[in-house]
Image 1 (tube, rainbow, N blue to C red):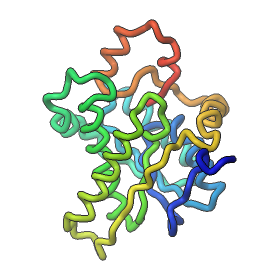
Image 2: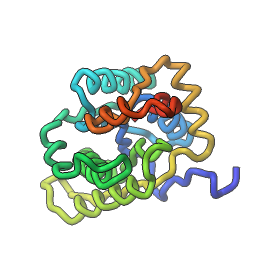
Image 3: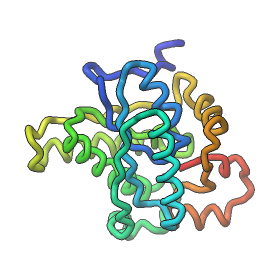
Image 4: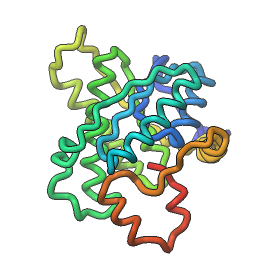
Length: 216
């Protein structure tokens, strides 16, 4: 494996709070972390998902996967109305546009706060595993979230600084492994990104069948 295709563990990272958008996207990442002596703690915070029934299905699949591996799993609040406020005015933005930037930041800011609350110095996100997401947007949102939390007193004991593990989680063969684990676990494989805006877009774009196989 060439260095350019390798996943690099940050120095001192023994545990990471992994924001999981869904079970399929997190499965290969969690497997890789466990195999490389990094303890994943999963945080499921995805208030963008619509409708609520879809949210519950994805959440339960994520929990089922974590429990099957004995991995600690935390449930974030749905908070869809707060998410709508975070993306207000961006409803008509295209996928990978400014609405996605705001969405990523909203979710990763909550993850950063949770990491500091739990005393976990690193956090990462499975959003960086999807080829349908803009990796630069994801990483920018994570770095901004870490900066915001590190510069804002929050009352947690010690208030230790946290860091975002910016990583392309499609490397090291994880994309192919994800697809294999999807079949192995029999995961529910969602048909659109998650929010009502991407849901509506998916109804109007049926010419690309590959997109229907992409979770989150």
